[in-house]
Image 1 (cartoon, rainbow over the protein chains, first blue to last red):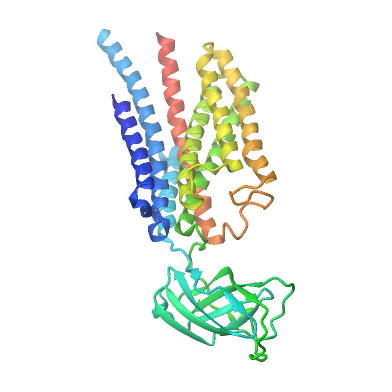
Image 2: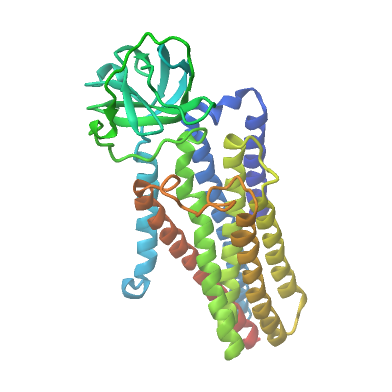
Length: 74
Length: 350
C-alpha cells in the first residue's frame, strides 16, 4: 500500500515534469539562466534516494511484523 | 548513535549541506551572451551592441571593452555607451595593419573589464575580414597585461550551459561516487572469493545495489540536463548508450541473484559477476567514449577535466560533493547490509 502510493507519486512527478517540458510553459526550465533545471536535477536525485529508502523501510517493516507475531505466539 | 565509529555519517551530512549551499549560493561569473554585429572589416569603424549576462553595467566602474586578437594584442574601444544593466554599445576603430595569417576571416575575442565586476570574455565573437579602406593609420595596441582586474569567487560562465554548470556537483559527482561505491563492492567480492564468508557477500551486494540506484539517478539527472542543453532527453551519444548497456549488465546481476536459490553458489556467482561487470563498466564508460566523438566533455580524445571545464572554484565544491555522496551511499549500503544480517539471523532461528 505504502509503496503503491509512493510509486504513483513518483510517476506523477515524472509525468508532470514531462508535461511541463512539452507544454506551453517550456520556458520554465530555461528561464533565469536555466537555474530551474539544476533544481529539477537535485529533486530527481532526492526522490530516487527517497524511493530506495522507503523500499528498504517497508522491507524492514516486514521483518518487524514477523518478530511481533512471534512474540504474540509465544 | 556512537559518534566515534559513525563520524563518517556526520561528515557525509555536513559535506552534503555544504555542497547544496555552496553549489547554489556561489554566483556565476558574468559573461557575454551575444553581439548585434559580429562582422568587422580591417581599417574601418566597427560598432556593436553587446548583451551580457549576470552584470550590473550601470554601476560598473572603469568599464572598458576590448577586442582580443589571436596574437594576444588588445584593441580598446574608443567609446562605450551603457544602455542598461546587461547591454552596452562599443565602438572600435580597427587599425589597417592587423596581420592576418590566412585568407580566412580572423576570429577574435571580445573582452569586457571593470573594477567592480572583473573581466570576462567571449570566444569567437568577432570575425575580422580584409578591407580596401586604409583610412585608419597605425595605432598602439595594448598588451594583454593591461587587464589587471581580478575575477571574484564565481563559477565559470559557459555558453548554453549557463547556471546548469552547477549540475557538475550533482550529476557528475553522483557518477563518480557510484564508481567509488562499486570499487568498494569489488573489494568485498574479491575478499569473498579468497575467503568465502557470507558477511563479505552481504556487504558487496548491498554496495552494488546502492551503486545501481546512484547510476539510475545519474541517468535520470543526465537526461534532464541533456534536455535543456543538448535539446533532447536521450541523444545517440556514445557515453549515454554505453552507460545504458552497463546498467543492463548490472540488472543482470540482480536477476542472477534472484534466480539462484542456493546461498553458496549465489554468493560465488554474483561475486564473479560483480567483478566482471565492473571491468565492463570501466571499458564501456571510461574507454570507448574517448575513442570516438562524444558530447560529454573530456571525451573524443581530450583529457577530462581540463581547466576549461572544471576550474579551481568548481573544484572546491566538486570534490567535497563526490566524498559527500560516497559517504551517504556507504551509509545507505550499511543500512541495507544490517537489514540482510538481521534477516539472515531470523531465518536461521526458524
